[in-house]
Length: 367
Ligand code: GLY
Image 1 (cartoon, helix red, strand yellow):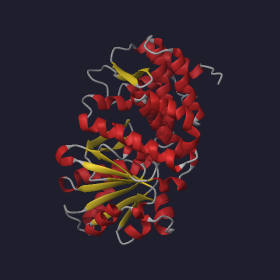
Image 2: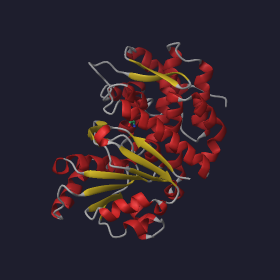
Image 3: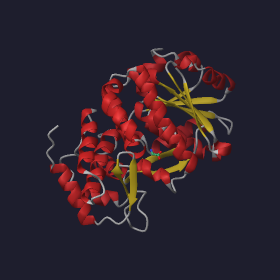
């Protein structure tokens, strides 16, 4: 089964190809054979598993393309590594016709896209996401960038890829924690857009965790469709794209506080979703039973539902006030108001927020 989802952005439109076993995708082979000037950006883990061990079918397609390898992990998504990639490209005299290929998870996609957006004022790039989180979210939509020690993704650009090639076969090599991390973003989509999909996830969660092909392809295709719809209507996050940040203000605070990479993004998003949902309960906008269903689904996926033990509510607040969604010093937060529906709020007081964080950290659940 092969799915194709189109991201319609006029001159910047591109397709997302979703399938099992990349070699069967002729369009990918054609693109790489026609792009003599390509460079793959990947990390040491993927290089070992995929490229050197010839573990995946993709090896045959890309074996003759130069590879630039960075170290694995969110803590390497920074300007120093950007500079290293640019040095490599300049040193090897790549000009504006170079095509960068991001082969990896969200870190590789974000950093490669960012380099593509600034190298000689912008070059083409493709995404080949290898983690579930990147396949359902990060590789699509053109958000690129790196972290700053004062805030996650604080340096970046919008730069759309020329195509996204998703192969669920990559997920077989992924540690379970990364599958679980990706599930947080999938659950996020269901909460934002689609009650039926949420119920489907309640019933099929274990099939996704066990990487069953039919359910996995269905699920990835669904998330890509949601994302493509959002990007088509709001590429630069002036409007509905902000909904995709459900849980992310809390999550970015956790990731910045703990040091990038110590908490996987999806793990932090899971806690963020719990806090956003509980805030909604406290504001009488969300039924408490739905809150419990959301928490239970995250919990059943193996995701954390409480933040780091030593992180105080005040420490969330300081970091959240630096978030990109803060406008005119007002924190804007996305909260669920029912299954399949969220709302953007901008008038929540600091004392309510502190209270919500404190209560979420101390809550006892009986699942
Ligand atoms: N990951 C959220 C977005 O791309 O907007």
